[in-house]
Length: 536
Image (tube, rainbow, N blue to C red; front, side, top):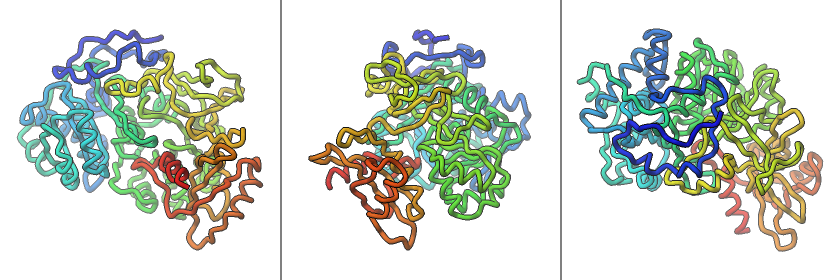
């Protein structure tokens, strides 16, 4: 069932978000094919995620812990209600105002996020590692009127000098304000299609973009990927490494456990050792992190600390088949791979349990549909590389329509990925569409070369891009991080690739580096590697 483009009456007094939505004729086609996706016209996502869950399971159920704080569902609701009361009382928030949130993953950040939604505000969650210049850009785009910031992360936000921003720190100052309120609050009856969240893309291609997500979208990701693929249980304990400012983390560490009545452990720090210790100490059963961290957990050699896990989810970058098999052999766990995007809020292609085929991302999550299209938007035959296009209950709406027509074409969300669909309907990642290297007439997938390099025992990490070449148009350029003590040997790596995949795909240029450039969410910033390769 396709959704009509007409918006329902908004509860927002501040019309900023409605006024800065892209025109409906530039939206993707939205699909609500599953009965559970047909939400009521008035819907507050915080009410549904928190208050409705308390009604089902009671107030005493463990809910959110981390940083020395452990709250039950009743305690988190009490604190979120106090935050909402402070926002609308002392701080003068009216529905539709944007509230900038800044801090590491903690129960307090979760309470602030839920309180913003309860009050009818729009959450703009930012990562604690952002610097003043980046925060100033966020402020310029979103025009927030209030900021709730962790006491430890105030300096950069003050330096950003966002115009008209009223700054309150937590837990100290906000906690003192909360103490004056009794923990009850009448949640604003927002429209299901009122904007609840402005989320920023993570910067793999340079300038960030703000994506606009409705209240219903936050439930849709729980009622599709989480309900049908992850299948959490009320007794599950979630944890992971992505920040709540990253929609992979927001879904996996807050929305999904709340929707299921489960609990979540919010980690401020997450080295491989710290993550393994947290899994063991808190009885974690569901883990969300990147392929890079799964590789690091294997290397740390403390797999006994992971014995309680029953579900592991990977996203953010392609999961190599070799890593999947190595983790399964070491732990018995089959990692659930998935592809999602900030524009669609969470994972839309995945597979779990017996449906997993290592090396394939999976099949469309129930509620979504996907196609492989050529440059003219026509479907290509199975086995042929093309552009991944997706439709479902969530989709791209860029703030102010910025670059909307690049992502949305003919009703489809174009993710910027090159994929192949096989005859059984499984989708196989090839590259980002701008990562395909055309050298002497051959199409070469950078991630395919990376996977070949990663099977060499001396290679810890690598990134492969195309570099300009006067004879071949482009050549394959590999940036390689070696294990400690390994000797840089370009020829050995080139021979290894030639022996692993088709010889023409080998890297003609190899640069050894101490670390690869990554976003704060762990994604490889290939545009930086391309810039370095272009300089020679």
